[in-house]
Length: 207
Image 1 (cartoon, rainbow, N blue to C red):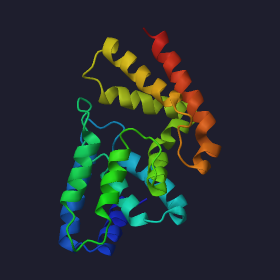
Image 2 (image 1 turned 30 degrees about the horizontal axis):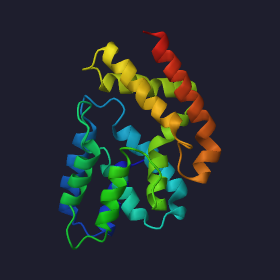
Image 3 (image 1 turned 60 degrees about the vertical axis):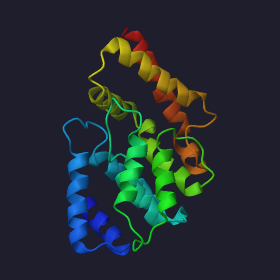
Image 4 (image 1 turned 180 degrees about the vertical axis):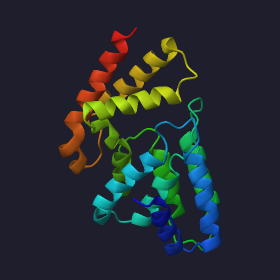
């Protein structure tokens, strides 16, 4: 998958100039390639865009959702709780009146990736599911994922990280559904719950 081409085609389509696109791509690639990013990186974007391309036909506003994918983790610090808000604000900062996007939808979509709760906008529900599909990987791949997350939170010692991670995971299990679309629930809900339960057991066994 050529992320640069997908990004360039999108921005050309919504009214950016070639020079603007090159600079914006450089900024985006730099942000997602920081050494501190073991999971929230360009590979994560690729996996989300694979899902996007599969289900694009179900989206009412595909350009807005694709743009939101590219920018949803633009700002990412493990020690901050406002990453999604800051990412949404940055995404809007590079848009102006000439760009053919629903800016409110972009803002709302990126902010929704913080809590991953059901949204009244179905496009945003698809975005949430694209973001959470990692939870339903085969166990070996899921284990790689949560080990990458641990590396991103390496500033925290185990006695802080483990109960915090377990609490966040248990929050997912409290939802009636982890995934927001029927398609993803049917395909991935059971596997995601099993993975989360197993990771919680793993965390608690390592105390």
